[in-house]
Length: 90
Image (tube, rainbow, N blue to C red; front, side):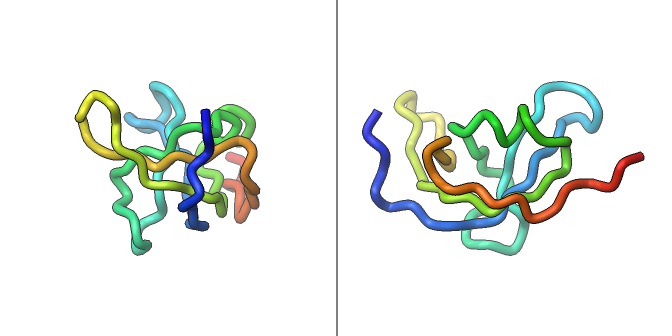
């Protein structure tokens, strides 16, 4: 895959829907350029290697789905990731 050139840094967070069940997903934090309901896909370590609720600063590129079912934000594992915060242990 050829990586997009038009990427920019935003803050994202991991979450589970419904809370505590289902797969861990990643979304933009509210109040930024991109809507919080856009999925962030591509860099699987954001969901797999950190606790749910971790916030990151990542590079993303807005992409169109080939199936015509909307847009998503792509973040490559090759782009820089900065951990901003992790949730407090319960």
